[in-house]
Length: 194
Image 1 (cartoon, rainbow, N blue to C red):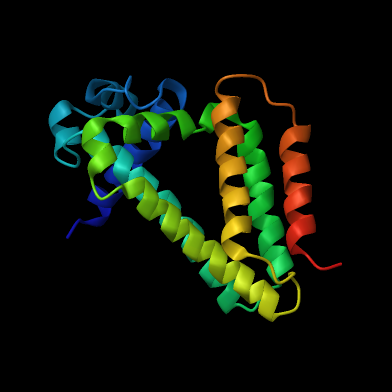
Image 2: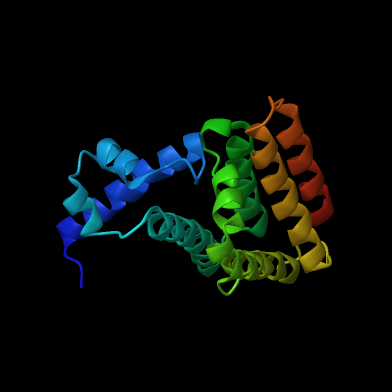
């Protein structure tokens, strides 16, 4: 079991590596880059992680579990489904216009590497985990009478692929703030009862 200081060091490594992956993509980041960003020795870094792939995989897993946990916690508190939706869509809107922190290109690069593409297709596993979190939210909203009775998988696909598409394109071209806003308004129209 990792002690508190070790866990703090791992978090520092992930935070610094995440910023590097967002700015340089996955393939361009080296363990040396992460050593420099964290100010750790190579031995100190390798004590916690063996490769950039290991660090990146943990970052992605952390993001996915956070989303599921956030939805579950808010549903358990019996919050309004509309309030939960508005909160997550506002986060998505901010992320879509913030190309500097986008991991979309790094995710594409990571999963395009032959070794990663075939391993139990982790990207698909993440997709299914995200679908499950969104399914719980949508079913909750439908049950509370706040959401329309929609085709959950289709609406989820619309949300995740439009969100990821804008995130990817934001690395390639300027994204006007109206684009994420229009997407979010349409998602709300599809889901939320008047």
